[in-house]
Amino acid sequence: MTRIGLIGDFDSAATAHRAIPKAIALAAEHLDILTDARWLATEAIPDDPQPALQDYSGLWCVPASPYRRAEGALAAIRYARESNTPFLGTCGGFQHAVLEYARSVLNHPEAAHAEIDPDAPMALLSPLACSLVEQAGSIRLLESTQIRAIYGVDVISEQYHCRFGVNPAYEALFDRGDLKISGRDPTGEVRAVELPTHPFFIATLFQPERSALAGKVHPLIAAFLAAAARSTRHP
View 1 (cartoon, rainbow, N blue to C red):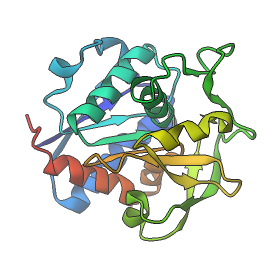
View 2 (view 1 turned 90 degrees about the horizontal axis):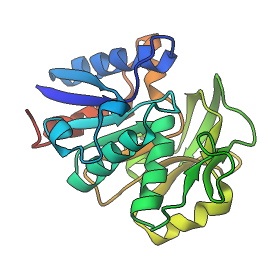
View 3 (view 1 turned 135 degrees about the vertical axis):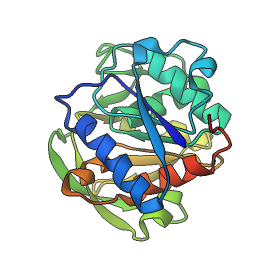
């Protein structure tokens, strides 16, 4: 059994939250594996999350931020990154994965999310130039990246529901670390990142889970589940 932890605060009104269980079920059937996906509320994740998360084969930080406890989401992301637990972040999960890396690895504890702290001196996540609420758009996947290998093409089209993304003023910070930009929109703004030194650590501003609402198996979600199934961290 491949146990997946869904990091986020379940809301039946969130389209992504309704889509994610379907996306997992479709990908699991496609891969012929058994999965057990469980919602993990951010306020229930302690600062030391290992006891709570060590039995999960994969962690998915889901959309619909602000989370009730952002520090819980950040702690879970750090655990996934440091323990080599397969990780997928979508929308809010993407934003918090970037934020966690900037704080913990790039030594910028002052990095902030403008949705939570609009007056922060270092708003690493800032309002998008154009809101992407219920929008779709194309993304160019960079050469020699894991996400491009997963999709098998260099340009994709995906759906969004977000208002915040990586602040271009701070994008150069990531040149100093292992977290790499792996997808950009037509204007060059960051839409996907990945950690090549990790077995599977990919985060996207778009919401691939929405494909499940049309009954489609998504290659990124299938790749995430396959990585989780290969993980040694089975309960």
